[in-house]
Image 1 (cartoon, rainbow, N blue to C red):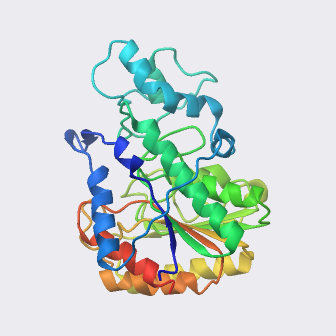
Image 2 (image 1 turned 90 degrees about the horizontal axis):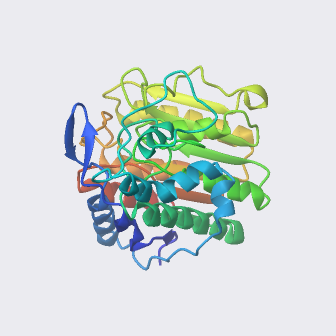
Length: 343
């Protein structure tokens, strides 16, 4: 019997962008249903099956983190794009620079840029179905640990940690980690910690909680001078106002091996212990793997079980939420490794 309750829905397949703009060229999207195929194959190989479908949750749980106009944009963008006579899927290409008016442009082309922080967030006709299903998985996983004190995995795609309160970025549209954390607060947890172990900094999560002292955020990631999302994730970003001291970034150089990565992890776990969290949300990206095509750390497959054990040793009710991991079959083995660390 597996100790981990896993929430999954095949509705993720409804978000299937054909291509993305990547370093000056249109290429097949790195973030597509093929990623879930690899994850599911790896989990099955290691005996993880019997997934639980999520419950449907009201929009208020999403709107506790994201603005109503932004969520309405995600729901309606593709139809507006078609109504405007534009071909293909929604792809933002125009962005506000140093000026953000209170209201977005009326034309969907401008509106898409208003709500975007990068050009890799394609919206297809059925994307919203997959995006909402991801939120339902995260909320089901959060409710499960609230009710049982156990551990759960929200097996979601697209990922979420780059999405801010009112913008999409880095393949992310709704911030599932933030939604789960806020759900736990609303359900009675006095303090919630979020640990982001994805290769890329969780800028959206940081942005949402940067001025709060009830949710502690720690992120281990590639140096922002050289890695997406570039403009967030420096060590001196520690929070603002009452949130000062409740944000911890651990930027690490390209080529980082597990020994150095684990040292940063142990520091983050110590900060979480000192914070006195009642629950833990883990943004679980496995793109720290040595062969990941869009990352540059050097973790190996056995390392994932080891760090899973270290996180589990906090002995906190924990929600693991799937983030990145791209292009190599080992992402499923690495995810299974982390789960095995929880016993």
